[in-house]
Image (tube, rainbow, N blue to C red; front, side, top):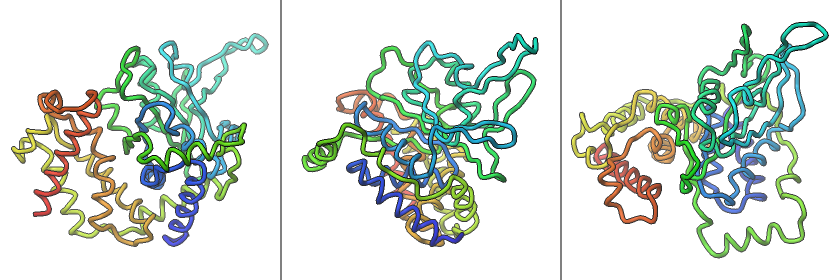
Length: 349
């Protein structure tokens, strides 16, 4: 596989996604870039704007269904959806030991996290200990049940593991916001707003006219799941990161820290970590590959800068309170955007 193969397949995915999800072209591109970079994604937006639909459509294009596949003695689903609620327990996600009366012994029953793509719907509605069970698996890519540890990823056999979580940022009653340290395990937080224009919204309605089923159910797979493993290797090893880009990313990350660049304190209480810089490079490589480029350019870094850093920066709350927005969430987003614009201007000067 070469970069041209990656570009062609990504382009075909974008084309087919646009048939079932109206608008959100850049959000779809970022989702595919995250997948190529081997990262998890947090989709944030109000209900009813096609977050779940977009994830399910992507799963179908990858040839992932709810059928089981056995790899190394472990059964995995292609696609698994977990609806997070306050009464959800960690064992409801990872699995548990079940007593078998016939053998008089405990046997593992694996949970829905054993899948290629796991859709964690409304992740902020689960209590923190349940969130931690999922997020630990995201970091380690393995689950321990009893005395045994089970892999969630087996790259040698074409098995990848990706979590795509959704949450409603506006409704806060009965929710448990993810701490910054847990948010850091998502490669990107992609913020989805309402459809931009009148025609986009009308096209959404047209798409559903005369249908009793969801449009994504008509999609057929264009690749096998193992394709992604090869594509990730091709992107990581085939997209060059020049010294100038490495210097640009390093300066961006360091300049977000108020201890290094004092004007950043007007927007941020805490800047980006080195892990944020690593994520920024990987996401930039994937974005460049989707463009069909063999090397990362400044435009690739700028394109993924906000989705990679927006959940890793703690905004200045005084500035958030001063922001004239309808809600606290959009005020935080505005402050982070303004702060990153200052950083980019400073580094590019």
